[in-house]
Length: 107
View 1 (cartoon, rainbow, N blue to C red):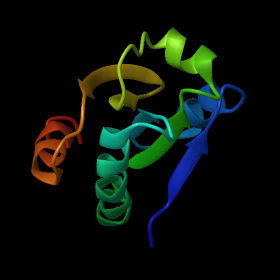
View 2 (cartoon, helix red, strand yellow):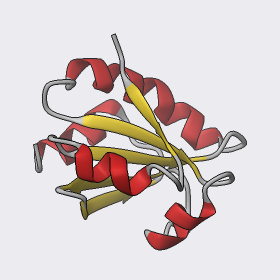
View 3 (cartoon, rainbow, N blue to C red):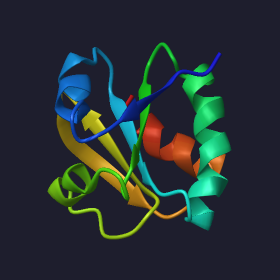
View 4 (cartoon, rainbow, N blue to C red):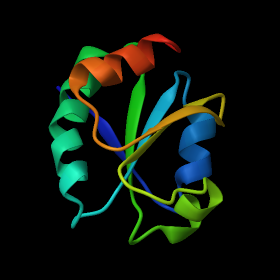
C-alpha cells in the first residue's frame, strides 16, 4: 500500500525533521503534464521503498513559501532530504529507472 504524505507550508519543516528515513519531496502542480507522468511512478516507489524512504508531495500553487525556500523554479522538481537537509535534486519527469538510479545513490 502506498503512503505518500501531503506536504504544505505549515507542516513541511515538521514532517522533514520528524522523518527517520530520507524524504523525497515532489514539487508539483495540478496543471503540470510532466508532474502527472511522475505521479504513478512515485506511487509505485512509495510501496516498494517504504522501509527506506518517505515520499511527500507539495503543490507549489498552494504552498509557494516552501517552494521558494528551496528555489524551485521548474516542476516537477524532486528534492531528496536527509535529516531535514536537502542533499540532491532532479528536475523534470524521470522514468522509474532514472529515479531509482538517483535514489540508489543516497539510500
